[in-house]
Amino acid sequence: MKYQLLHQSTEERMELILRGSISKTVLLLAFPTLMMSLVQSLLPLTDGLYINNYSGSISASAVTYGEPVINLVIGIAQGLGVAAMALIGQTNGRGEYENARRMAVQITAFTMLLSFIAVPLLIGAAFPISWHVTQEISAGVFRYLALYSAVLPFAFFQTAFNAIRNAMGHPEDTFIPALLLLAFKTLFNYVFIAWLGLDIFGCVLASWISELLISLWMFYVLFLKKGPERLRLKGFRFERELTAVLVRLGIPTMLSNLTMSLGIFLINNDVQKYGAVVLNGAGIASNITGVCFIVPAAFGAAVTTMVSMNIGAGQPEKAKHACTAASGMSIVTSFIMIAFLMSLGNVLTGCFTRNPEVLAVAVPALHTYAFSIIGFAVCQVQLGAFVGMGRTRMPLLIGFLRIWLIRMIFIWFTEPTLGVYAVFWGNLFSNSVAAVLTTAMVLRTRWRSVI
Image (cartoon, rainbow, N blue to C red; front, side, top):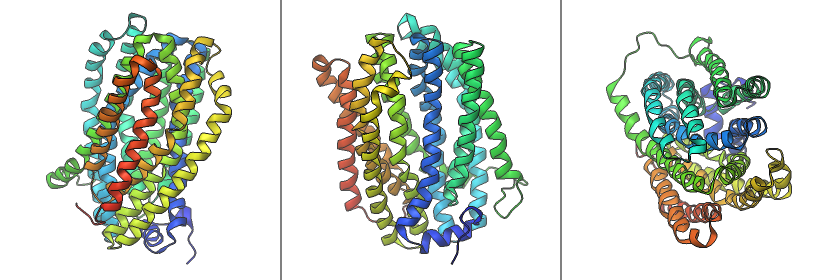
């Protein structure tokens, strides 16, 4: 059967996922997700690039400190997105396409409701958070967090869109808006930061305008574009039973994202005591390596789609083989990313700053972070398989162990000797141990739905 890949319906894409070659299908699903994730990871990189070069280390440190807090809030939407992929994917696997579209509308509406609750929460949190940092970045942290609250509804909506299209077997639909978002963000960062000199306000304004434009396009694709997959709001009302299932599946992943972002925030809080220069250097290394972390981990979303649909269709062995194939691909991709970072690390960090004190922190941090990619990638792929089965508590467990237990304890014991470098080595150690744990769990799990 000849597949017109970019114009397939959900039913045709389902046939490919359930009957096609595992390796080819994993690559088909992973590539657009990989490209989308790669583009998304470049967004904070563009912020860092412009803020570092045109606003200085203090503003850059404020943004670096504030980003995990924002990610903590957006983690709520990402938790719902993970639940959506499991629910919609398994429903499609059973051939209940109309029911899957009904679920998609419910998920979108509930996600937006939560976004409007999150806005005042972030504004309120900006006060105590800015009070507990060094005086030199306090005002910048408050300004960044309070202003960014206006971007949250768009960020939540985009998370729902990406989850729905991935669950429908169309990850390629997430790539184009991500690419446009990067283009808009780069353009508006230049206008507002480099040209007009608006500093942190310009950074947030660039995000607001860019995310608004992309959200309008996504709304058109979901609700206005004619076709069999068009979602309809007519007669909509919240369904208590479906919302309860969504919350039950989503809460573990929400908590996982929250604990991970909170852990990173607390680690940044520990780093900022060494001063804005050190925090800036660590932030530069994190932004650069973040791009490379995303690439091999993108196979995790493909695994969630394949596992959920194959489990829903009663094909557990094929689901298991998809996880194995994706794990191998993520390891190979990780080594490529490591080679890239080790060979070009000095050049990449030099694009952000020429301050030798900042570079003295950024370069060794980047080299240490690079080797953390392997463990992180394997862990994310295997957690994607658990999510596909509906075992959404597994990311919560592993996230807690990785960040709060393994990494925090490592930093606590080694910081007196290693100083700030304990944070970088703690990342490598905790990711490696987490990969060993998830591999052991995958080998022992029963491949069946728990929804």
